[in-house]
Length: 354
Ligand code: SAM
Image 1 (tube, rainbow, N blue to C red):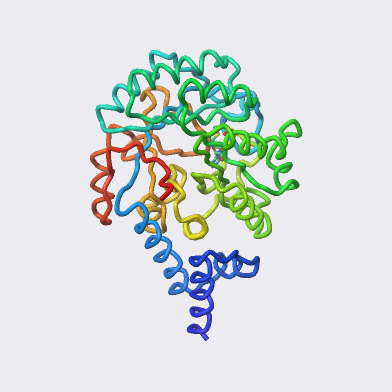
Image 2 (cartoon, rainbow, N blue to C red):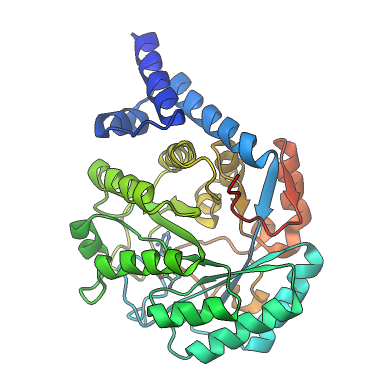
């Protein structure tokens, strides 16, 4: 019996690897199975596929969380505007440049500017920051992750030199989207932003939280279909973790195992994708980063924000921001990756087309 289930999972994995579209019952089998040999096979094949394209290289991104102000009120997020307890801060262009300066000496060749949707940073300000970084560090890539903007804004940032844009779609199911967001936020617009970004020429990242409230197998299936359709260059997935000052306080977090299996499935669906082992994964399990890499991830994003603001960017409870999560501890992260047979490289870490 066990063998039978194992063989069934292996067949599904082999189908995925050869480019076959996953059926919903196959997704259910991969995500819900307690057949460890079968799920181990899933992760091993995903890792093998990543090795074939990216080898043993792990790309790093210096994450600069430059504003904790946000005009949105997403039900899951600790920096939602309705959270009166959130500590707010903004970094100046000079502070951001200082982070990059330090990051460059550590070996970072991609800087990710992430923040809430903060109107203080006008198009002009963002362009000036992007242009400043790109002029000073010509061998580096800049990734923006600042939410939903107009196509004109995206075009202007691109023109200023931005290379990549991360905008998780959060969930591709309309009803689920409405249960996670206030009504002024529209799934349709989020998707349109992703297509605009792609058309403009960015390397684009979509993604979702694993185990978010009201998520089901059906919504995950729609997420995977959306990813297949969009063909993003990056996919950011990590477990949902509740925050005590949000409407989802006290709900259950997403699990390590479900996140790992989804990382593997996404790698097999889209072999070239840039796939981070996220901070949230490192937060729910001390070996989350390593396990993520072993399941097919090939990117890590240490925190390069000034130390005194890190605790203020609390998207969820107990978010890691020090220890091996911190950019200044890169030597520890290097060692941890080396211990599992991988190497952190000094590289922009672009999407490999061929
Ligand atoms: N404002 C930008 C945006 O909308 O894309 C970027 C910042 S937003 C805080 C970055 C990501 O954090 C979101 O896309 C969401 O998936 C993730 N996030 C927010 N709250 C979370 C939580 N409670 N658990 C896990 N991830 C969370």
